[in-house]
Length: 133
Image (cartoon, rainbow, N blue to C red; front, side):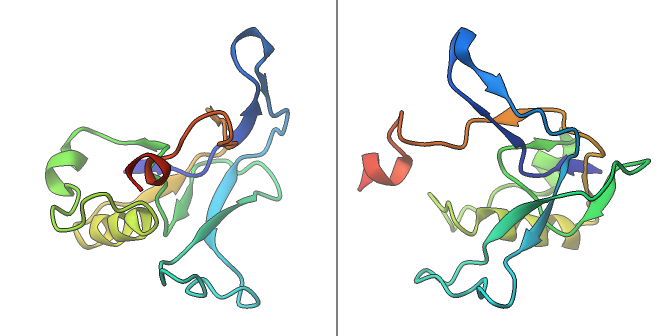
């Protein structure tokens, strides 16, 4: 099994960093029909995290996978390597890997509670597409 979702945020850095106080974890979902998931110019499926309504008793099965939060046995890397024909893929990486994991028998689960945090803001550092153009 793979444990994966979009983590809750933290803001700031170093001693000034502050984690979300939200006790509920998130589950990955596709965008709603009112905002078509394939409506972006690159036609890549987009995900978003939704807060769970309540704390479940166990991790929740998830059809999607998050690249920045993926805990699994190391065998995952051998069974489902990144596609060598899609170098530098960013939007689309998560959908591609989730489908490839599923077809190779891997199950993805969202954690029942928050276990890590992510600094979602990007203004403090350049992104890959800004550096590589």
